[in-house]
Image 1: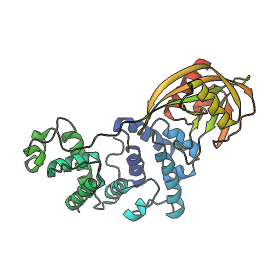
Image 2: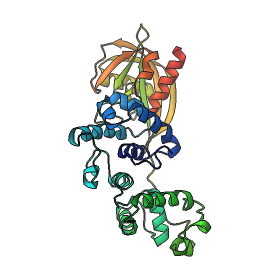
Image 3: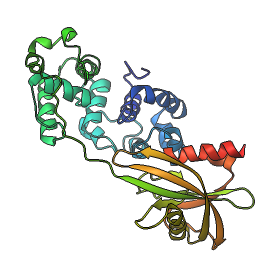
Image 4: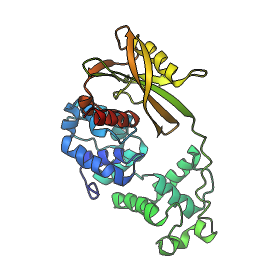
Length: 337
């Protein structure tokens, strides 16, 4: 991994943020590309948000990118471009919580701050035989307190990385390699044959499914209309095709026509479904229905977005889109080429 053995707090910070909610193999190429685009915190701070979001496009959880950008400006303006060393200063940066602050300060500055991620939670609950629900903040607090007592004062970075790697490679979620585990002798879950039930995680709530209708309005010059999502909304700062959630009692075609009237102040006729696709977010899933639309009356205005633009399909790849809309843009670009 390109960040393994790294002591530069900037690179450690970027890698840790990318690895939140993202697998290593998925984050790896993004990290390398991000470092080429923004090799220092000054480069990141001086970039505009659209450049940062475009570099992040496809990684998901885009608030991570917006927070990185905001924090980089704080580091430049408040800390003169030098990454802060104290835990309290690090955790004060936007988008950095206890886990990330502990990882950065232990790896970059050799401070004995213990990290607790999913791998560490699994390892510790099995070792100590903790059968309480790991969705509970009380259980996570108990794990944190135990690891805080265990962490090496002399080698905190090695300890943290060893704990995470032991949990990842040996103490895996299913079929843990207990015979080759270096701490097997003291593991309660192994002794009591409970590695299949520890850690206990209560069932997740069923994710709601939504049908989303969006409109592709094309002008006579071949340009299509895209809208910039509000900064404070989910997927803020990304571009999309205007539309919204289907309401009870309406067809998806009616959804598109209603949403475009509400969002743009125009009357359209959604005359053909261009494509539909399914996409899963962290707390819900969607089916996105994209319709070709004919503008009947009115001039589009950004009533519920930051900005709207008419762009040629060939220009769509210049703008950052969320995953589902990105698939739609790729189809449009392909058909336009």
